Each structure stands twice: as C-alpha cells, then as structure tokens.
Length: 65
Image (cartoon, rainbow, N blue to C red; front, side, top):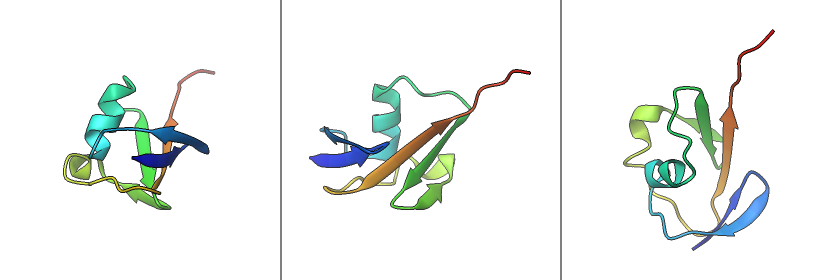
C-alpha cells in the first residue's frame, strides 16, 4: 500500500501503526505519531489500521542543552 510518511511517499505492507514504527526501529518513548493530522496515543498504535493514502508524521524528541 502507498502512504505518505513525513512528506515522502512510501510503499509498505504494514497494516497498523505499531508495525510501521517497529519496522523503522523507532520503538522508544520519545516518539510521537500523527495520522491524518491527529496525534495518536501510544496505547492505540496496535489497533490503529493504516489505509492507502494515509499521511503519517513521526516526530522524535532529543535531549540536549
């Protein structure tokens, strides 16, 4: 299926947000996922299905100073 990930069109076989995040090795607590302009709670990643044309934004936070 084709979707937009951080403004880039990608092809993926992952059916839910959790699997997509795992495939990108972004399973840390400092990740926020937005699906079609709505921020998803981490507890909902497993049951949130992806559909062709979805827009996914993944934001990672880094510490520093």
